[in-house]
Amino acid sequence: MILFVCEGNVCRSVIAAGVLQKALRLTQGVTVGSAGTRALVGEPADSMTAAIASRLGISLDGHRARQVTPELLAAADMVVTATRPIRSATVQTYPPAVKYSFTLRQLARILKAAETGFDADGLTGPALVTALSRSLNQEKARLIAPQGEDDNIADPHGRPLRVHEQTSEAVVLAVGELAKALGGIPVPWLPPRLTQRWEIPRTAAG
Image (tube, rainbow, N blue to C red):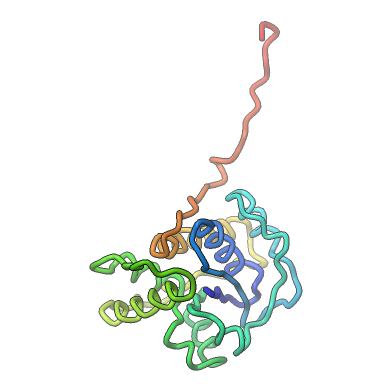
């Protein structure tokens, strides 16, 4: 399982999981989930996040937030977090996860910078995800980590729609890199203006 983790489990990790699930619909045996380090347990996806996901052809209607636990982390083959502090909190919850946890932007950066593409070598399901995690760990030692907040994706919960749009775009683009590595088809980002439909009044002549 690939487990996305944010704080409340109503925005970032939710749309990341939804996007990857759609991207991997033809990939065999890879499961995707999400959780939060300070989850709003039982709450549905944030309404703005859900609306953006719907625009991308993804339904978050059935989502209910859940708290990340040692058991969830132990069951995961890869853990992908929204920020560095969340990754630290995740590793504190289940120390062995340090070997297979990454921030989303870190993961995308490693995949882009890899000298050679990841070779799935016929692997599927958990074995495929585990092999990718090991490859990413080997590659990340050769990269210089960015400074400041460059590895973090901002929490949009309770903030204006433009922040939700910026966050969702960052998530979709980064998840696309992971999808490609796993043999999926990345979900394209659709800015709001590209989804607007304008009705042109008909004249009397038709």
